[in-house]
Image (cartoon, one colour):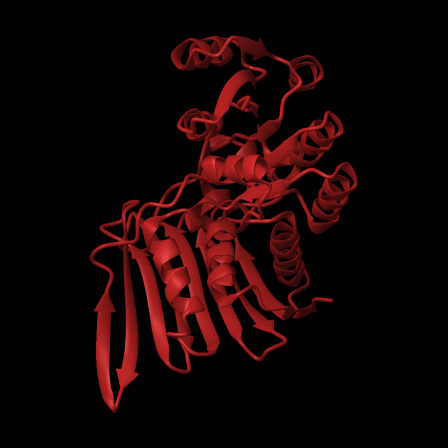
Length: 346
Protein backbone atom coordinates (compact mmCIF):
# COMPACT_ATOMS: atom_id res chain seq x y z
CA UNK A 1 0.00 0.00 0.00
CA UNK A 2 1.27 3.46 -0.88
CA UNK A 3 2.06 5.75 2.01
CA UNK A 4 -0.05 8.83 2.69
CA UNK A 5 1.63 11.95 1.34
CA UNK A 6 1.58 14.55 4.10
CA UNK A 7 2.34 18.25 4.22
CA UNK A 8 2.65 20.70 7.11
CA UNK A 9 1.93 24.42 6.90
CA UNK A 10 3.63 26.48 9.61
CA UNK A 11 6.85 25.44 11.31
CA UNK A 12 6.41 26.65 14.86
CA UNK A 13 4.19 24.04 16.47
CA UNK A 14 4.20 22.43 13.04
CA UNK A 15 7.45 20.65 13.96
CA UNK A 16 5.50 18.45 16.38
CA UNK A 17 3.07 17.61 13.58
CA UNK A 18 5.99 16.55 11.38
CA UNK A 19 7.28 14.30 14.17
CA UNK A 20 3.83 12.79 14.66
CA UNK A 21 3.46 11.92 10.99
CA UNK A 22 7.03 10.68 10.58
CA UNK A 23 6.54 8.24 13.47
CA UNK A 24 3.72 6.55 11.52
CA UNK A 25 4.88 3.81 9.12
CA UNK A 26 2.09 4.60 6.68
CA UNK A 27 2.87 8.29 6.24
CA UNK A 28 5.60 10.21 4.46
CA UNK A 29 6.01 13.94 5.01
CA UNK A 30 6.90 15.12 1.54
CA UNK A 31 6.43 18.89 1.84
CA UNK A 32 6.47 21.77 4.30
CA UNK A 33 5.55 25.42 3.99
CA UNK A 34 6.49 28.53 5.95
CA UNK A 35 6.98 32.17 5.01
CA UNK A 36 10.29 32.19 6.90
CA UNK A 37 12.80 30.85 4.35
CA UNK A 38 15.53 30.38 6.97
CA UNK A 39 13.27 28.30 9.22
CA UNK A 40 12.04 26.39 6.17
CA UNK A 41 15.58 25.41 5.19
CA UNK A 42 16.56 24.51 8.75
CA UNK A 43 13.55 22.27 9.43
CA UNK A 44 13.71 20.74 5.96
CA UNK A 45 17.31 19.73 6.51
CA UNK A 46 16.68 18.44 10.06
CA UNK A 47 13.68 16.35 9.02
CA UNK A 48 14.96 15.34 5.55
CA UNK A 49 11.97 16.81 3.72
CA UNK A 50 12.57 17.69 0.08
CA UNK A 51 9.49 19.75 -0.70
CA UNK A 52 9.96 23.26 0.73
CA UNK A 53 7.69 26.20 -0.03
CA UNK A 54 7.36 29.77 1.18
CA UNK A 55 3.83 29.67 -0.29
CA UNK A 56 1.36 27.18 1.20
CA UNK A 57 -0.92 27.64 -1.79
CA UNK A 58 1.88 26.68 -4.18
CA UNK A 59 2.67 23.61 -2.08
CA UNK A 60 -0.96 22.48 -2.20
CA UNK A 61 -1.09 23.06 -5.94
CA UNK A 62 2.08 21.13 -6.79
CA UNK A 63 2.45 18.30 -4.29
CA UNK A 64 -0.84 16.33 -4.62
CA UNK A 65 -1.02 15.64 -0.89
CA UNK A 66 -3.34 13.25 0.95
CA UNK A 67 -3.27 14.98 4.33
CA UNK A 68 -2.25 18.45 5.49
CA UNK A 69 -1.70 20.02 8.90
CA UNK A 70 -2.55 23.71 9.19
CA UNK A 71 -0.40 25.09 12.01
CA UNK A 72 -0.43 28.86 11.48
CA UNK A 73 -1.68 31.97 13.28
CA UNK A 74 -5.41 31.53 13.89
CA UNK A 75 -6.42 34.07 11.25
CA UNK A 76 -5.19 31.75 8.48
CA UNK A 77 -6.81 28.52 9.68
CA UNK A 78 -9.98 28.93 7.64
CA UNK A 79 -8.54 30.11 4.30
CA UNK A 80 -5.76 27.51 4.30
CA UNK A 81 -8.12 24.73 5.35
CA UNK A 82 -10.51 25.65 2.53
CA UNK A 83 -7.64 25.68 0.02
CA UNK A 84 -6.38 22.30 1.26
CA UNK A 85 -9.83 20.75 1.07
CA UNK A 86 -10.26 22.10 -2.45
CA UNK A 87 -6.95 20.46 -3.35
CA UNK A 88 -8.37 17.10 -2.20
CA UNK A 89 -6.60 16.89 1.16
CA UNK A 90 -7.82 15.67 4.52
CA UNK A 91 -7.02 18.41 7.06
CA UNK A 92 -5.72 18.38 10.63
CA UNK A 93 -6.13 21.96 11.85
CA UNK A 94 -4.46 23.32 14.96
CA UNK A 95 -6.65 24.63 17.73
CA UNK A 96 -8.53 26.89 17.89
CA UNK A 97 -10.38 25.75 14.79
CA UNK A 98 -10.93 29.29 13.53
CA UNK A 99 -11.33 32.92 14.54
CA UNK A 100 -15.02 32.43 15.29
CA UNK A 101 -17.90 29.98 14.94
CA UNK A 102 -18.99 31.33 11.56
CA UNK A 103 -15.59 30.50 10.08
CA UNK A 104 -15.65 27.09 11.78
CA UNK A 105 -19.03 26.26 10.26
CA UNK A 106 -17.72 27.28 6.84
CA UNK A 107 -14.78 24.91 7.24
CA UNK A 108 -16.99 22.03 8.34
CA UNK A 109 -19.39 22.55 5.43
CA UNK A 110 -16.46 22.61 2.98
CA UNK A 111 -15.10 19.34 4.40
CA UNK A 112 -18.46 17.64 4.01
CA UNK A 113 -18.84 18.94 0.47
CA UNK A 114 -15.35 17.73 -0.45
CA UNK A 115 -15.96 14.40 1.33
CA UNK A 116 -12.75 14.83 3.27
CA UNK A 117 -11.99 14.46 6.96
CA UNK A 118 -11.46 17.52 9.16
CA UNK A 119 -9.90 17.02 12.58
CA UNK A 120 -8.94 19.64 15.18
CA UNK A 121 -5.72 19.16 17.14
CA UNK A 122 -7.14 19.05 20.66
CA UNK A 123 -3.89 17.51 21.78
CA UNK A 124 -4.66 17.20 25.50
CA UNK A 125 -7.01 14.32 24.70
CA UNK A 126 -4.01 12.35 23.46
CA UNK A 127 -2.35 11.51 26.79
CA UNK A 128 -2.33 8.29 28.79
CA UNK A 129 -4.25 9.88 31.66
CA UNK A 130 -6.90 11.44 29.44
CA UNK A 131 -7.59 8.20 27.57
CA UNK A 132 -7.70 6.19 30.80
CA UNK A 133 -10.08 8.68 32.39
CA UNK A 134 -12.31 8.69 29.32
CA UNK A 135 -12.65 4.91 29.53
CA UNK A 136 -13.59 5.14 33.21
CA UNK A 137 -16.19 7.83 32.53
CA UNK A 138 -17.68 5.81 29.68
CA UNK A 139 -17.83 2.83 32.06
CA UNK A 140 -20.07 4.92 34.33
CA UNK A 141 -17.78 5.37 37.33
CA UNK A 142 -18.84 9.02 37.78
CA UNK A 143 -22.54 8.46 37.18
CA UNK A 144 -24.20 11.58 35.78
CA UNK A 145 -21.74 14.49 35.64
CA UNK A 146 -23.37 17.66 36.94
CA UNK A 147 -20.48 20.06 37.64
CA UNK A 148 -16.98 20.73 36.39
CA UNK A 149 -14.13 23.21 36.63
CA UNK A 150 -11.36 23.35 34.03
CA UNK A 151 -8.47 25.82 34.18
CA UNK A 152 -5.10 26.76 32.73
CA UNK A 153 -3.37 29.60 34.56
CA UNK A 154 0.14 30.91 34.14
CA UNK A 155 1.89 33.12 36.64
CA UNK A 156 3.65 34.86 33.76
CA UNK A 157 3.62 33.30 30.32
CA UNK A 158 2.46 35.52 27.48
CA UNK A 159 3.71 33.79 24.29
CA UNK A 160 5.82 35.91 21.93
CA UNK A 161 4.86 39.10 23.76
CA UNK A 162 4.23 41.86 21.26
CA UNK A 163 3.64 39.33 18.46
CA UNK A 164 0.60 37.72 16.86
CA UNK A 165 -0.61 35.91 19.98
CA UNK A 166 -1.45 39.22 21.62
CA UNK A 167 -2.97 40.76 18.49
CA UNK A 168 -6.74 40.23 18.29
CA UNK A 169 -6.84 40.59 14.50
CA UNK A 170 -4.50 37.59 14.14
CA UNK A 171 -5.36 35.46 17.19
CA UNK A 172 -9.02 36.25 17.87
CA UNK A 173 -8.37 36.56 21.60
CA UNK A 174 -5.90 35.86 24.37
CA UNK A 175 -5.42 32.96 26.80
CA UNK A 176 -9.04 31.82 26.58
CA UNK A 177 -8.73 30.98 22.88
CA UNK A 178 -5.07 29.91 23.23
CA UNK A 179 -4.91 27.89 26.48
CA UNK A 180 -8.50 27.67 27.67
CA UNK A 181 -9.54 25.97 24.46
CA UNK A 182 -7.50 22.89 25.47
CA UNK A 183 -9.00 22.54 28.93
CA UNK A 184 -12.47 23.39 27.64
CA UNK A 185 -12.34 20.64 25.02
CA UNK A 186 -10.93 18.12 27.49
CA UNK A 187 -13.75 18.75 29.97
CA UNK A 188 -16.42 18.67 27.26
CA UNK A 189 -14.97 15.45 25.82
CA UNK A 190 -15.00 13.73 29.21
CA UNK A 191 -18.55 15.01 29.81
CA UNK A 192 -19.72 13.66 26.46
CA UNK A 193 -20.10 17.08 24.82
CA UNK A 194 -23.46 18.06 26.38
CA UNK A 195 -25.45 20.74 24.55
CA UNK A 196 -24.64 24.23 25.94
CA UNK A 197 -27.39 26.67 26.86
CA UNK A 198 -26.03 29.80 28.61
CA UNK A 199 -22.66 31.38 29.31
CA UNK A 200 -21.54 34.20 31.60
CA UNK A 201 -17.96 35.49 31.48
CA UNK A 202 -15.54 38.27 32.31
CA UNK A 203 -12.14 39.12 30.83
CA UNK A 204 -9.28 41.21 32.24
CA UNK A 205 -6.08 42.73 30.88
CA UNK A 206 -4.54 44.56 33.83
CA UNK A 207 -1.13 42.89 33.79
CA UNK A 208 -0.75 42.53 30.03
CA UNK A 209 -1.83 46.07 29.25
CA UNK A 210 0.58 47.48 31.82
CA UNK A 211 3.51 45.55 30.39
CA UNK A 212 2.55 46.49 26.82
CA UNK A 213 2.49 50.16 27.78
CA UNK A 214 5.91 49.95 29.44
CA UNK A 215 7.47 48.07 26.51
CA UNK A 216 5.55 49.84 23.73
CA UNK A 217 4.27 46.52 22.42
CA UNK A 218 1.00 45.46 20.83
CA UNK A 219 -1.42 43.77 23.22
CA UNK A 220 -5.15 44.15 22.63
CA UNK A 221 -6.48 40.85 24.06
CA UNK A 222 -7.24 39.64 27.58
CA UNK A 223 -4.61 38.24 29.94
CA UNK A 224 -7.23 36.41 32.05
CA UNK A 225 -10.70 35.09 31.33
CA UNK A 226 -13.22 33.30 33.53
CA UNK A 227 -16.66 32.02 32.70
CA UNK A 228 -19.52 29.71 33.57
CA UNK A 229 -21.28 27.48 31.03
CA UNK A 230 -24.63 25.82 31.71
CA UNK A 231 -25.93 22.91 29.67
CA UNK A 232 -29.38 21.77 28.63
CA UNK A 233 -29.00 18.62 30.75
CA UNK A 234 -28.64 20.77 33.89
CA UNK A 235 -24.86 20.45 34.25
CA UNK A 236 -22.50 23.41 34.55
CA UNK A 237 -18.81 24.02 33.86
CA UNK A 238 -16.45 26.75 35.06
CA UNK A 239 -13.65 27.76 32.66
CA UNK A 240 -10.59 29.86 33.55
CA UNK A 241 -7.49 30.75 31.56
CA UNK A 242 -4.67 33.25 31.99
CA UNK A 243 -1.26 34.21 30.67
CA UNK A 244 -0.55 36.37 33.73
CA UNK A 245 -2.02 35.83 37.18
CA UNK A 246 -0.63 36.34 40.66
CA UNK A 247 -0.62 32.69 41.69
CA UNK A 248 1.95 30.44 43.35
CA UNK A 249 2.41 27.98 40.47
CA UNK A 250 4.39 28.66 37.31
CA UNK A 251 1.60 26.89 35.41
CA UNK A 252 -1.61 25.43 36.82
CA UNK A 253 -3.64 23.03 34.68
CA UNK A 254 -6.57 21.28 36.25
CA UNK A 255 -9.80 19.63 35.16
CA UNK A 256 -12.22 18.47 37.86
CA UNK A 257 -15.57 16.79 37.23
CA UNK A 258 -18.19 15.87 39.82
CA UNK A 259 -20.82 13.18 39.22
CA UNK A 260 -23.58 11.42 41.11
CA UNK A 261 -21.36 8.38 41.76
CA UNK A 262 -17.84 9.78 41.76
CA UNK A 263 -15.43 12.58 41.01
CA UNK A 264 -12.44 13.01 38.72
CA UNK A 265 -9.34 15.18 38.86
CA UNK A 266 -6.53 15.61 36.35
CA UNK A 267 -3.84 18.19 37.09
CA UNK A 268 -0.28 19.00 36.19
CA UNK A 269 2.53 18.20 38.61
CA UNK A 270 5.01 20.74 39.94
CA UNK A 271 3.96 23.52 37.59
CA UNK A 272 5.12 21.53 34.57
CA UNK A 273 3.70 19.42 31.75
CA UNK A 274 3.48 16.04 33.48
CA UNK A 275 0.04 15.11 34.75
CA UNK A 276 -1.52 13.21 37.60
CA UNK A 277 -5.03 11.71 37.62
CA UNK A 278 -7.35 10.57 40.40
CA UNK A 279 -10.89 9.28 40.87
CA UNK A 280 -12.95 9.64 44.05
CA UNK A 281 -15.85 7.27 44.71
CA UNK A 282 -18.20 6.07 47.44
CA UNK A 283 -18.94 2.39 47.98
CA UNK A 284 -21.27 1.12 50.74
CA UNK A 285 -20.92 4.34 52.70
CA UNK A 286 -17.11 4.44 52.52
CA UNK A 287 -15.03 6.94 50.55
CA UNK A 288 -12.27 5.69 48.26
CA UNK A 289 -9.50 7.49 46.36
CA UNK A 290 -8.20 5.85 43.18
CA UNK A 291 -4.84 7.08 41.93
CA UNK A 292 -3.83 6.36 38.35
CA UNK A 293 -0.37 4.84 38.86
CA UNK A 294 -0.06 2.82 35.65
CA UNK A 295 -1.79 4.56 32.77
CA UNK A 296 -3.25 2.68 29.85
CA UNK A 297 -0.91 2.13 26.90
CA UNK A 298 0.11 5.45 25.40
CA UNK A 299 -2.44 6.58 22.81
CA UNK A 300 -1.31 7.46 19.31
CA UNK A 301 -0.39 11.04 18.55
CA UNK A 302 -3.11 13.17 17.00
CA UNK A 303 -1.30 12.88 13.67
CA UNK A 304 -1.06 9.07 13.86
CA UNK A 305 -4.70 8.78 14.95
CA UNK A 306 -5.79 10.94 12.03
CA UNK A 307 -3.63 8.99 9.59
CA UNK A 308 -5.11 5.71 10.83
CA UNK A 309 -8.63 7.06 10.31
CA UNK A 310 -7.78 7.96 6.71
CA UNK A 311 -6.00 4.70 5.89
CA UNK A 312 -8.63 2.49 7.56
CA UNK A 313 -11.60 4.72 6.69
CA UNK A 314 -12.69 4.80 10.31
CA UNK A 315 -14.09 7.61 12.51
CA UNK A 316 -11.69 9.86 14.41
CA UNK A 317 -11.98 11.89 17.58
CA UNK A 318 -11.74 15.72 17.77
CA UNK A 319 -14.12 16.17 14.87
CA UNK A 320 -14.96 19.34 13.02
CA UNK A 321 -18.41 19.21 14.63
CA UNK A 322 -16.84 19.33 18.10
CA UNK A 323 -14.55 22.12 16.93
CA UNK A 324 -17.61 24.16 15.93
CA UNK A 325 -19.17 23.69 19.38
CA UNK A 326 -15.96 24.90 21.05
CA UNK A 327 -15.89 27.97 18.80
CA UNK A 328 -19.55 28.71 19.59
CA UNK A 329 -18.68 28.63 23.29
CA UNK A 330 -15.61 30.82 22.86
CA UNK A 331 -17.64 33.34 20.86
CA UNK A 332 -20.33 33.40 23.53
CA UNK A 333 -17.83 33.73 26.38
CA UNK A 334 -16.13 36.69 24.69
CA UNK A 335 -19.49 38.28 23.85
CA UNK A 336 -20.71 37.87 27.42
CA UNK A 337 -17.54 39.54 28.70
CA UNK A 338 -18.01 42.37 26.20
CA UNK A 339 -21.65 43.13 27.06
CA UNK A 340 -21.30 42.08 30.72
CA UNK A 341 -24.44 39.95 30.52
CA UNK A 342 -25.29 36.25 30.10
CA UNK A 343 -25.44 34.99 26.50
CA UNK A 344 -27.81 32.24 25.35
CA UNK A 345 -26.52 29.65 22.88
CA UNK A 346 -28.80 28.14 20.24
